[in-house]
Amino acid sequence: MKTYLDCIPCFFQQALLSSKAAGIDDDVTKRILDRLAMLVPEIPLNSTPPETGRMVYKILREVSGVENPFKEWKDASMQKAFELYPSLKEKVAASADPLKTAVHIAIAGNIIDFATNPDFELEREIEGILQRKPAINHYQAFKDHLKDAASVLYLADNAGETVFDKILIETMGKTVIYAVRDKPVINDATVEDAVTSGLDTVATIISSGSDAPGTILKRCSEEFLAHYKEADIIISKGQGNFESLSAEQGPIFFLLMAKCPLIAKDLGVEQGDIIIKSQMES
Image (tube, rainbow, N blue to C red; front, top):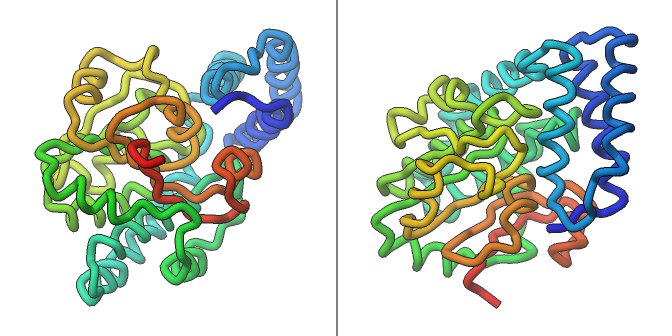
């Protein structure tokens, strides 16, 4: 997905929100925004938004010295997800199609996104999503492809939704490589977050090697790329991974909520729609 002009003010909003989350004072925040303003002329519109996003958070780290601005918010969202885990497992167990319900739960976790919706109401959103039909629905293709898959690469998104990802992984019953960000960016999942969620008990956790809020292949590690090329199926969670991989071909299935109006436009759906999209479908 390309960078739209409307993405540019969003980069400033993300920097401002991150500064507030980290308790950075106004003088330092102004210096962060000044540095970001100097970056604007260099932003190529043919690049993906996560390419610029990694620069935004690099500036924030360099100017403020804060490595993980959303740590408290991430911890709080993970705790809320843990509280919901037992009841969500019950929903899967009681479902006529447990895999379908687990997929919808995984997408519901995607509402945990401080960059686009810092005021999400997790429990209410989950109930709504479980009742909603996807605007793009390649679930049957996902189910069919998963059936014969020997290796699954699962691209994580936000830290809190790792708990919901665990439910899907447990339901799939497959050998899974779970790939997270190399270092904190927005509230995206890191190795530490994935371990805290218990993902290490159901999957092998690796870092993508990239500090971008997405999966930019040219910035990923050789270890990650080897898994990417060898995977029978790739599950891509969230908007950042969609933004960076939407032009790639292969056995990729995007699971996300279109929270951003530009992503919704790019997908040809309405803002707030849920998506199960195969790169192998027309």
